[in-house]
Image 1 (cartoon, rainbow, N blue to C red):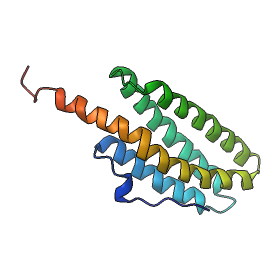
Image 2 (cartoon, one colour):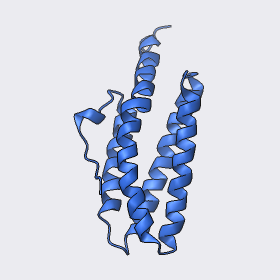
Image 3 (tube, rainbow, N blue to C red):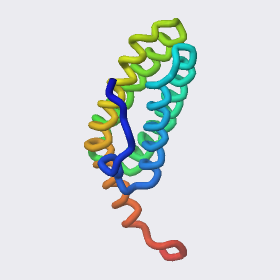
Length: 137
C-alpha cells in the first residue's frame, strides 16, 4: 500500500492549499491504517474533506479565470465520484476495494499536487501579489 507522508515536495507556498493538503495527508493515513470497523467512518472523513477542499479550489479557479481550470475541475469531478463510490462500498462492507482506493488516492494526490495544484498555487500567489496592500487603492 502506498502511504503518503507530508514532505517539502508537497509544499506549494500557498497557505490555504498547504493547510488543506496536510489535513488530507493525515486523514488519508487514518483511512489507510483503519480497522475494518473504522474504515467507513475514516473514508467518509476523507471524502468530506476533499469535497470541501475541491469546492474551494474550484471557486478560486472560476473567480480568477484560471487558464487550466477545465482540466483541473474535471479531475476534481472524477475523483469525487470515485470517492463517493468508495464510501458506498465501505458502508456496504466491501472494504478491500476501498483499501485499494486509499492506496491509489495517495499516488494520485502526489501527482496532482505537484502538477495541477502547483500551477494553481502559483496562479493564486500572483493574484495575491497583484492586489494593493490593505488600506490602499
